Length: 160
Image (cartoon, rainbow, N blue to C red; front, side, top):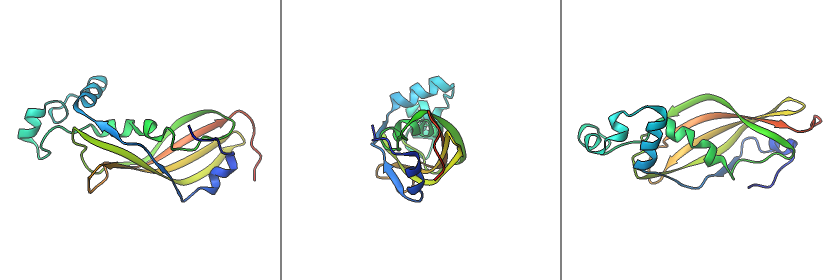
């Protein structure tokens, strides 16, 4: 886990790359498990033989939402921890684009750039990250998103 930084220091990092996650394997077992959870068993995800025969992908591909759902795990150990945080909430996305398919057997990782950090109140910080999920050896990223994270603090932080 990262060392906690003071709340005001987050604002000083706007515009800079925060870090890059470790690689995550996207194998057929992970794709099938995700398909079961979300009830999306379209053949392009779960039928390797048919996907090889009937798609331009050469096999199955991960759900776009699988790549998106891994952002929390990808951010672990990369995104800054704020000193005095009570909880961190996934506040949402302003933009998500799925740019390239992630083939079964590929590895992905996320690159995080802090594009905005503002105080919503004396106990809340909003951070916006420009996130790119890269495919190992791929020419195009799997996805690009503007991810918004809300941090609630245990105590009031005075304005700078």
